[in-house]
Image (cartoon, rainbow, N blue to C red; front, side):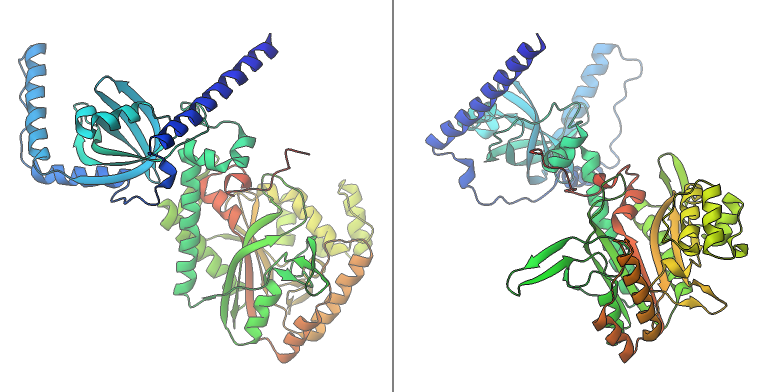
Length: 535
């Protein structure tokens, strides 16, 4: 029975699709092909119409008293309100606001000689009153044959209905695009999550919340640029195809450059090229761009994602902490309207000074273990075994510290917290702490248990950097596929001389998730990576 129902639904769908194509053919045969139209002049979006009409109404009807209905029976009250509406309408119609909008028809109700429809555009939707006598008999007949999803241009004037809804009285209806597919049922929108990601264009039509997220994403990136520009930073672009994909612990995607017959990789980071620019004398630089990491997909990871890195000469990781705290607070206030935001029902306060903890102090706080008293690699591995922390034989004490932090601490870091002073072993591009050469001047910001950024006092000693690259090469040979490789040109740049520098990288997608209260990274990527339906 279920199979019969499915077959019947498919037959009905095929018939509906066939009807839409027949309607298009009829329009084309009548010389009304919508696809030959090349432009349409919009004067307003839906919300602009409503705002303009409201302001005009307040100006023209200022001081006009409300009708007195006290003591009247229902019929008298109805007549009084109707007369008041007609008088107000006459005043407004005598000084009409002419508008021209364009968008997708999402609702239609035909009522003989007059109809209503809703047109949805970038900023929202507005009701349109379509009367045969206003647009003409032929045009009205064509409109009655229209389908939900068709794109229309509407010229007319704004008015307020008796129910109080600001609408457009159409004087001209122009079919701009004939929709040949059927949109999801309007009351539930596109609820299939997988299909929302695969057909984002339909998701944006049916789910205003999705559209709002991506509008806010654009605002976030705009405000990041404003913030950095006001601090004297210069935006730059660096290569995506590289011979040596360094700057992060990640597996790259490999490809081949046919013209040069060379194997190349897609970048996993922006770091090493931006540091070259610091060497060249560009003292404050940043880049917002896509990077590519050959890793799994989950709620916070996508193989290609947007990273921002910035580098500032003559400062250190303390300077990067101040910049980060200021920028996050600025973005929340500009984009969300408050330094207090809510994620998944939890209030996060970006207005208070961010907490600061060293990585070892965080482990001591949440796991009760003081790694400052752990003597060596073997003692660290013994602790890992005791606490059921999985590790590899190649791991050092520094690696074990990081594993303990991930296991015990990250889940506790809800409010903004800078985790500082990481082990040297997991920070190959970072300056050592002068007071403790086992640690480096590095921090990560955690909010809502997520790592939001990663920052260093950048290593500018070329001899030390060469030694650390050698250690990374050895780690790769030992099986660490995410290890860095020696980059001779970058070492040459350091030998020319890089000033003391602070640097930082931010995951833009994760930041957008936080500021839009989005559950998964796919909700903030217009076209996330999806497994092929053919697989």
